[in-house]
Image (tube, rainbow, N blue to C red; front, side, top):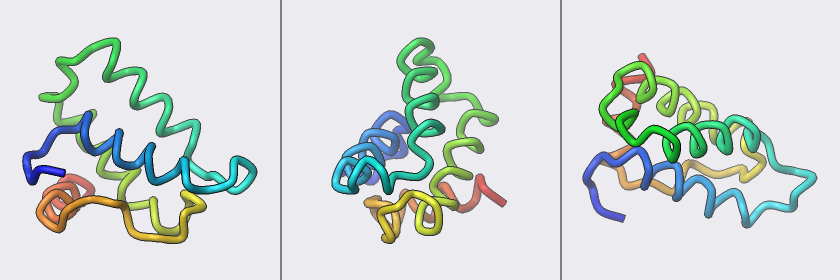
Amino acid sequence: MSDTLSLSSVLDALHAQQQQVPANDRGLEKELDDLRQRLQDDPSLENDPQFCTTVAWLVQDWPARSGAGQLPALSPLLQAGLNQFAT
């Protein structure tokens, strides 16, 4: 993935990572699907600080609650940028 902060790319990467987890073990699936749908319906959310913060919170919760048991499949630069929004 590119180091460009694209929320669509972030959500797609999380979705792909979660698809590796058995369906019954997936956490945050509803939240992830909701964010992906909202962004698909309104691409201008890519530039919305509140939406970006919500994505950052999802990324922050990912290791503990996604069921993947792993850090998000994101570049360190994207991870750092999203951590700034989460705080």
